[in-house]
Image (cartoon, rainbow, N blue to C red):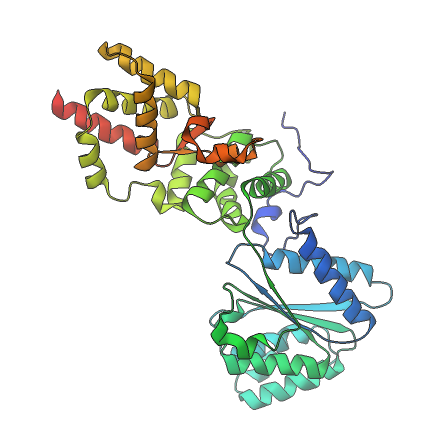
Length: 398
């Protein structure tokens, strides 16, 4: 029997991963940004003034999540006396005419004008602007327009919308997937508020993925899977929620009806998500490994077997040391602690092993940068690839 696992009484299901408009019950680790935007927009409604707001940050960092959550809360807070309207437009690869048509189609839902969308097809830019201005005069309630991917807009077009928003009492909230540079000062001065979203720490990102997994799956997901996703993102990408949510979408069919998933299936998904999880230059890696002595090759063979046969994502430092000692015993070599430390450092340097960023959560954060103090390691490449290379070398020497 599958037991539903809920977060604070909330269980949503697949919509929490696949619905682009879904808003989590809590935007973790963005409380300051959320409170600031909510207070500012609430004041703009109370005092009847418009704003131009800009959110900057890499795609997937959570710009839309904050905006959608705040507007949802704002709508609930003002439902009795001042209902608000929201229009969200993706500006990516849109001409000004396409942008205006999209705005007109969405605005038509809130006006009493009987607009035929087909009549817009042959309209000029000037005509579309005129219709848009007329339509907005007919909208009685507070209107918020969200322009996502605004970096696609031409400067002249962007400024025109910003000026129009001020004139018509529309609040325009724009997002761009970069940070305005000094050459964009002319545009930057048009905004009443500019907010750059910073990256998340390991602990923060881990909490976000645990929350989204709890909202999405009917049972508790193995915490090691969530930790491994977080580690891989820090190792191969940038620390943003969007990438982890994308991975959870790919894992959804596998994790949906079971508490864990086949190790090989999970590794396949991770390999598809991160090109660097594969060995980028197999020839050079193979050449390097071939020059290592027989003890190191056996150590690597035992290491890859550990991850494959035990379906593990992590290995403790003690277990890693045991593998080294087993390799020494097999060859009747002397066990040298300094040699173990040296080999571990080599494996990290050439990109085979990485220390889990979860070590940052220890009492002494400096441990995360000291190989002698790391508690857990993970393979930074597909262990099956390493196994295949080591087997090839053993076969050649046989």
